[in-house]
Structures are given as structure tokens and as C-alpha cells.
Image 1 (cartoon, rainbow, N blue to C red):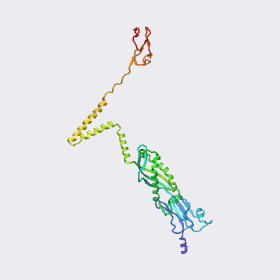
Image 2: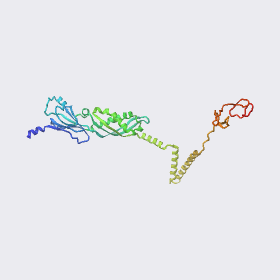
Image 3: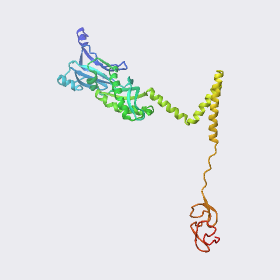
Image 4: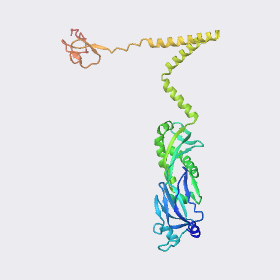
Length: 349
């Protein structure tokens, strides 16, 4: 190859590709070094990449993963913008951007200031929360227009601030719309994370981004609320307050008896012992006191079999005889139920 031919060849680009060696690069502008792109050059777009051609500031053709030989047939927008004639085969100038479409994992978020939440049980409470999320570029054209601009290299750090602020600003609305009580938040992290993911998705679509996952690792309540929860838990564990008081007194008496503080300790021990003795004696007497006998129902004899039956019964439960008013066997005057003699004639019934 002559020196002239080698010099001309070095002014053109015949292979275009990008090997990503980083973990956080979102967009890479291919460095042409002032060279022109040869028509018929080989373009290689790897998996999780999209190549975008930009002509004089205008986004032109977009190439998905694959290997291409550049021509007017597979660059229709560039052909129209540059008014190329059919079969154009000359070098041209254009900017080439490689957009990384892989999922960016383990991105952290957190509330720098407390988030207000209205709770049905505690009223207004302040919450702090943190977790992780993952996202990807799903619309390279929208992302280049709305976010990227003309910088040569863009990393995750360039968009994570926007994502974090959007998440935190929407968190109070998400907590309110979920209607999960403050006491139940810890048991519903997965449900709340999915709810937040669905609620946040429309906010990132115009930027060409998509939240793939949203994980809540912790939601912490204010110290006052946690103290109230601890007290309520303690009350539930104690159960019967009377028995708990007796137990506490017994523990105090034992500690006082073991105190080696001399006469003062002995006095305290004796006083605690006397108080405990009185308390235990009262509890014992209350438990041993017999219960008053229940009053017995009044009974009357059956008019037929003379068995004692409850007063007011219409029939005898023993012989089945009716207990309605009877008449004297001698004079026929009405008799009260159970009467043994007639009050009129004195005849025995």
C-alpha cells in the first residue's frame, strides 16, 4: 500500500462498535476523531445496546442489536436528511451514540427528611424509609432528547438524583393511597413496594426510563410512636394486672431480703414483707370466701300426687295432673290449688 493510499484510508472509519467495560455507563458517544464514516462500513451493536445516528443535531436511524453494513437501504432517515441519491457510496459525517439498555441494579434510595403520613390510630406521624431499586432505558430516542443532550458520556449518577427525588416526593402519597396502618407497614413491605412501583411508573415514561423493581427495606417510626407500641406490647404480655402486681411485690420482697444494707435494708425488707403478707392474705381470703347460696325457687304440692313442684306450674312434672283450680268434693265450691280442706264446708279433700 502506497503512503498516499494509506493516508486516505486512515481518514475513514470502516468499523463502528462499542465494548462496554464499565458497570454504570448509560450512553457512550463514539469517538470519530474527525474522521468520516465510509458507506459500507460495518456496524456492530451488541446485546443490551442500541446505536443511534445523529445528523447535525437531529436523531436519525436507530439500530437494534446485530451486525449491519451501512447503506442507503438500512439508513432511510439519514438518506432523507442528507438527500442522498440512490446508490450513494461516499463517506459521510454523523454522530453515533450507543445507548446501554441493560438493567442497572442495586440503586439505593432513602428519605433525607421525614415523610408525613396520616394514620387512623396515631394521627399524623413522621416516617423515614430506605431501600433499593433497579431501572433501564426502554426508549433510547426519548432518553437522548429529554435527558442525555450532547455530552460525550453519561453514567447512572447523572439520573439517580432525579429518580431518588421523584421517589421521595411521591412516597407520602403512596403511603396514604395504600391505606396500610402504621403498625402494619413492616408486614406489608412487598405489597407496598409493588404498589409504589405501579404508582411511579408513569413519572419515568416521558424520560424513556422504566423502573424494573422497587424494594422497601425498612420504614422506621418516630421514637414516641415506637415507645407507645412497646408499652402496648408490654401490657399485652402482662395480661392480669392484679396478678402482675402480686408478682412484682413478691420480687421486691425477695430483693429486700437479699439486701445487705444493714438495719435500713432490714427495715425495708420487713416493711415490704408485711405489705406483701397483707396483700397475699387479702387475696387468699378473697379466693377462700364461700359464695352465697343461690335462693331456691318456691314449691307447692301437686293437687293429685302431692309431690312438691315449682309454684305456678300448670301441670305436674311427676303425674301430669293439671294444676288449675279444683272444686270441693262435698259442696262443690272452688278450691285453691293444693288445698287439703274446703274453706266453706270443712270437708277433707
